[in-house]
Amino acid sequence: MGRIRIGVAGWDYPDWNGIVYPAGEAAATDRLAWIVRFVDVVEINSTFYRPAAPRTAESWVRRTAGRPDFTFTAKAHRSWTHQRKEPLIRETLDGLEPLREAGRLAAILIQFPQSFHRSPEAMDHLARLADSGSGWPLVLEVRHSSWNHEGLKEILADVGIGWCAVDQPRTGPALLPPIPLVTAPLSYLRLHGRNTADWFREDAGRDARYDYFYSQEEIGELAELATAMAGSSEELILIQNNHFRGKALANALQMKYRLTGEAPPAPETLVDEYPGLANICHIIRDRLF
Image 1: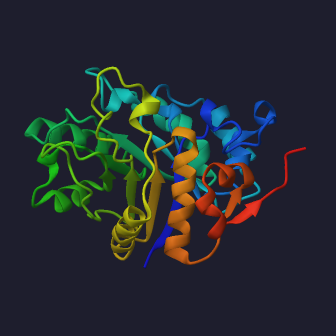
Image 2: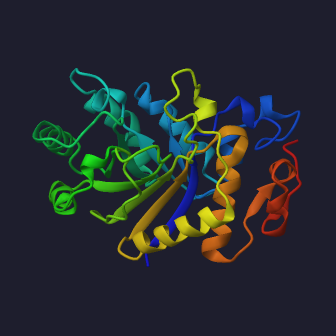
Image 3: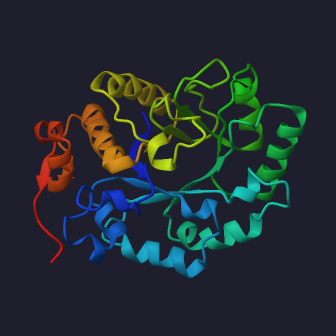
């Protein structure tokens, strides 16, 4: 079975202060250097909104030097997926080059919205992205059920794009369930939570949509899915995106325990927020200063 890396989407959330990050010290915390103590991988969200400057990517490498086995994934810029204009391919790749050179870039996540349906035009667009990003570890995330069809595995494998299985709120038949395809050496599993009440609510903010805590039963179900995908992969990236109030990190640690049987480290403040972690985690009580 391939290696499973478990982590979180993003690391800079104000509501993590005093929960993920030490209470009273959060303003002075190098949040990236802190979070790598507890996860194997972090998904970079900021690159969806603007390509990274190479010097910024260089700083990410420096700040995680104490964990040489730690890795990143990064979202492709939204011009690849959400805008009807020429995608910023070169700018995106140039910004991520320092991560690739350092051996720290596991994947570029091409995250399409629910409105992106399978069609000949969509397949042509994917083929162009694959050609432009040839040699880079590209992974596709789609959310509409039209992508659930025979032949998709072969199509993605032919163009060299990995597959991201998505666990998302199941609000109706148009929503794609998490399908355990493996189309490249690296596979990806992304867990958004199952907050059906707020997922498509127009006035729901980001925090409301991702305010969900996976139960132990759901963690067990998804651990089986991760194991199945890892069985056909060289490496599986598992990302918790249910970030509100540190739920992503808490569930990530529960997943690590479920898959390895070993107690992962956890910040004391996170265990205070989610007391169930005390039975499965090694509590880190040290502070920053």
